[in-house]
Image 1 (cartoon, rainbow, N blue to C red):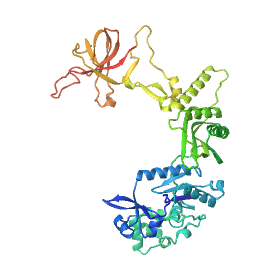
Image 2 (cartoon, rainbow, N blue to C red):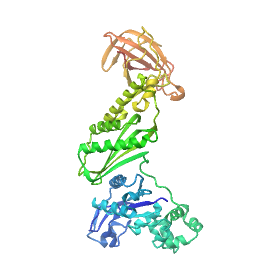
Image 3 (cartoon, helix red, strand yellow):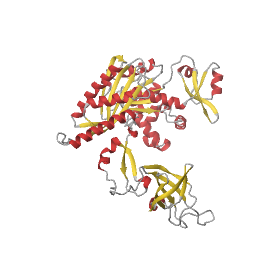
Image 4 (spheres, rainbow, N blue to C red):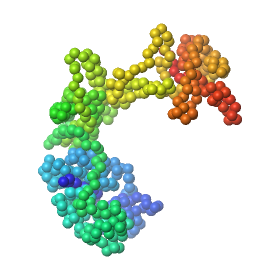
Length: 508
């Protein structure tokens, strides 16, 4: 049976009546309020003018939805220390699936107390409850904070609560009250078919989940890693030496766990939990499954040394976690006699180290594409994931004693040039201007006609005639005429127009 922990009402503790307002239909209404304001009879959705009339000394703050969401996400990151299955329950709540985790903290009651007290020390006012379903836990949080309900006792625990505790919306809550159903027990006493017919299947399902009759799974913010190891500290650590030693020991444990199932890590994440609630996560990826702790240790050292925002321990880290979020089965290879395998290993290790320092997207390999369009004939792909494909790729062979057909430097986007005149219909220019410099053509090779892929381009791109050009100073260019004379380029009146010319690359 799954057990769910819900915490809600996250907000800074305050003894003075305070509210947060938001604009709704061009009027300021209460978006959130503290306990002091609630005791005065204020409620969410109440107009600000009415609230001020009831309490002139009320503290009013403007809502910042983006900041609230960021704070809730930060608290969710901190809650990862209790369970990896943490889901958001916006706008102010969290769901924690603590199935199989409570015993690590001394039981459910001890876990609840530890979490609430820790958040209180960070300045939050928190309500929390534990139940067998997430909806029941949320309902208890709203009406009976700090409750722990045993499996099967959900219906009895919430039957006395008002129907508004279900959070079904104002329209359904008002309809239930008008029907004389004021408590959840009153609604549960009616036949499910009656409730569904009157208020819809969604509310009927919500009620069933609140009563413990089945439950929809929560949607964790992060996928569950394949392997997790962690180290908790009674006294927080803050020195680089202790952090490195901890990561090294965790790497040994992680490798030992994966080795039992013949797996290696492809994506690793180290999470550092500070005593003040701040969580910092660092991730590294590898091109091949890692099976040695020394490799993990070296990659994280490279990553930590290259951080633009250095790891700040603050008052220290009280927990460090190392997880493998992506693993693969390790394929054994003959490494003693095959020098090629050794070369591949060294190259993959070098790429991993460079990627850990500057980022995996910046280390690329080039792969040939099955197209004759010059700018599309090569694809840049991350080297960590496509190294094997790059080493097996087949490129067009160059004919010996012949000049190269393609330039050494190809522009991402062809640059326009000015051509005063050229031989028609297929001739090259006699001179052209590029980047405000005039180039006189002395040698020409071509044309090489390349038609666009009409089945993909829908006829929007024109046929190109490419020329290999050498100017009087010995510079060699790859230029093309975009379009055919009297065939593809027309002016606004439908008459043939002069095609444009472009330089697409430079030869060495």
